[in-house]
Amino acid sequence: MSASTGANGIRPPFRVLVIGGSYAGLSAALNLLDLCHGKPARFYPDTPPPAQKIPVEITLVDERDGFLHLISTPLAHASDEFAPKAWARFDDDVTALRAPGVRHLHGSVVSVDCEKKTAVIAPSASKDHVEERYDYLVVGSGLKRAWPVVPQSLDKGSYLAEVGSHIQKLKDARDGVVVIGGGAVGIEMAAELKLVYPAQKVTLVHSRDKLLSSEPLPDDFKDRALAVLHEAGVETVLGRRVTATAETPSGFDLTLSDGSHLATGQVINAISKSVPTSSYLPPAILDPDGYVKVHASLRFQDLVPNAEFHYAAGDIVKWSGIKRCGAAMHMGQYTAQNIHQQLLKEVYGNEPSFKELGEIPPMIGLAVGKKAVVYDPDEGTDDGEHLLKSYFGQDLGHQICWNYMQLGREFLAVA
Image (cartoon, rainbow, N blue to C red):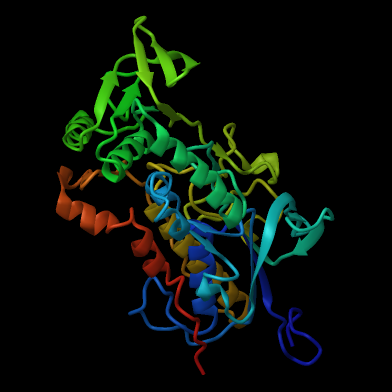
C-alpha cells in the first residue's frame, strides 16, 4: 500500500483547484475531468482513452458567477438582444460542470501558499475567508480589463443592468458615437456598433497613423483592417489623440491634439491597459509586469516550493504571441494533459510524456462588420465574409467556443 493510499486501500481523490472560469480554466478543468474518468480529452475525441482511471475532485473558483464570452463583448455591449447570451451562469447554464467530483466556488482568491498547497478564498456570499487545500493548482484568472472593454459586474443580474444602461445611452445618442482607441477592441466595438445601428454615425479616433499600432503585426494587415472598417461605414480620425472631453447639452465635445474639436452624442473609451490578476501569487513566480513565469510544460518555474504541482494557462502566462482565446484554450488542454501524466506516474508509476508549448508567432482574427480580417505568418493577410463565418460564426465566436468546450453537454461517465 503506497503512502498516498488510505487505510482501506483506496486512494482518496486528488484535489485540483482551478482559479479562473474562462477559456483557459474551463479547458483545463474539463479536459482533465475527461482524462481522469478514462475518456479521451474533449479537445481530442478521436484519441485512445486512458487505460486507467484516477479519482479526482476539481474545484473551479471565479469572481464571476458565470462564464462570460469575452470575445463577444463588442456585440454584447451594442445589442440588448445578444447581451444575455454572452453570460452563462456556472451553476444554472454550464451543464458540463454538473459532473461527479466537480464544484464551483463564486469568490476571489486572496492568497496562495505553494509550500502548504493552500489557497485563501473570499466567497462572494460571505465575509469570512475559507482555506482550500489542493494537490494541484491551475492558475487561469487572466487579465483585468477596464470598462467598457469588459463589464465589471460579478453576477449576471448586475451585468445585464450595467450593459443595459450602456446600450440605452448608445440608442439615445443624437450626434453619433465616438470610439477612442484603434486597437483590436476599439475596431471591433466600432464595427459592431455600426452593424447593429446602421443609421448611427460611428467614428473611431486613434492617436497613431495606423490602427493596431501596439501589435507586432505587418502593415498590410493594419491597412486592410482600416479599409474593411471603412467598408463597414465607420469613419476614422488617425494621428490625433483626444486631449480633453467636455460634456455639452447634446453629448460631448472632444478636443484633439491638433486643436480641432469633435462633437458627438456618446463616447466609448476602448483604451485599456490589461493587468494580470496575479496579486494572490508569490512575487517570486511573477515577472515585473505580474505575468506568471512558466516552463514550456506550463508548470511554474522552479522559483517557489512545490513548483511541479502548480500550473498556469491563458493570458496570465508570460509567453509569446498575441493574447487570444484560442491560445488560452490550447494552454488549458496542455495543462490538463500534463497534470494527468503526473497523476498516472504518482498512482501507477507510468513514465510521463509531457506536452510542451512552442513559441507562438503573432496571429490574429478581427471581426469587422460583415467581414473578418485575419493574419497568420504562413497564409499572410486575408479578409472576407467567409472568414467571418469560419472564425466567428454569427455571434463573435460564442457558439463556436461553447461547442468546442462542450459547455452545454452533460458529462457522461464511462463504465
